[in-house]
Length: 175
Image (cartoon, rainbow, N blue to C red; front, side, top):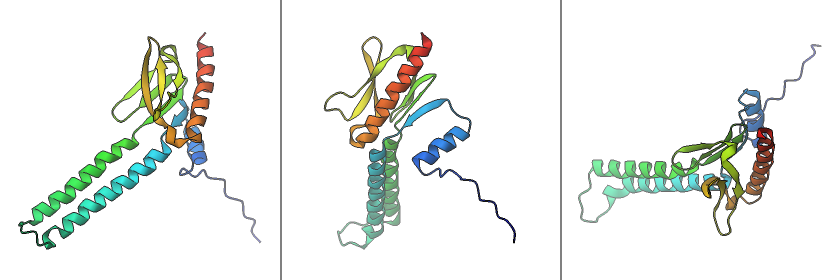
């Protein structure tokens, strides 16, 4: 009887634990924490799919109505294309991300990225009645961090705690 060797455990890249282990194995350990808005991404994907479906369906049934208006195939295709463009625009709301590492903090909101060194950062806060956290900077400035959202509840609280731990670690190393 041939002896079989067990297969090595392979990290599943579709789970949080798998992403962390795949990220660690890839040698890209520049960032210790990466946060994305979980609930918002799920909701935005559903909204984009519904928008696309409504406009595509509307494009199909547009010629079959008796509204008295003469719609052509180009009008149908235009309506479908508009729905797809609108859905793609909605999907840009899935972009927010915060990365924390030795270099500092990189904040990506809907448009553009911004990187801040630890010497420029005073802390992180979650103002009352606000939807997302903000990065407190020197000179009484701040940057909204749309990736840490209040509707993510415990996940957002854990991200804030981990952010503060890393902030304490890296600012003490600079002294």
